[in-house]
Image: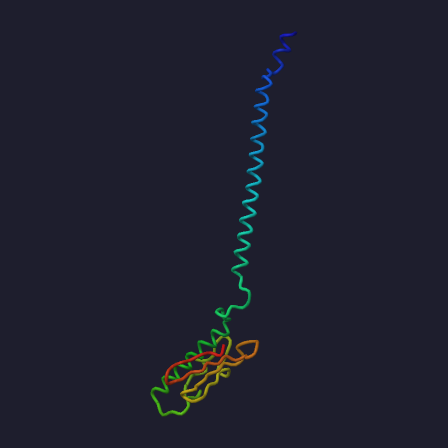
Length: 159
């Protein structure tokens, strides 16, 4: 019977070896815990970096370089009107004013997605010629105005 008991019982390691094994197991457990903590920290830092990047990329207000499509359409047509007015002035240097009638646009040339021919007006002298598109913006001034010196070609928009 004594022999059976010895066979069934697990062999015991010396107490010093058992302490070393327990220390190694505890060290591995601590390393695994530290890896998990470090992984969580890395994920947190990555999320914060992405959040900061997104916040920095968002504009703080309306950017003056980004214009709505309404403004783009009006600018394009007013630019075409200015180019035609300059051509007319070059061909007829004695002309005192260039009007919408002188520009000779068809309604289909001025009709777009947001504006039609009735939204555009122009006038003035060759040194101070202007063209306007009405109701472009929701805030005052609601119109977009292009002022141009037909002799020199210098031009500027009011906004």
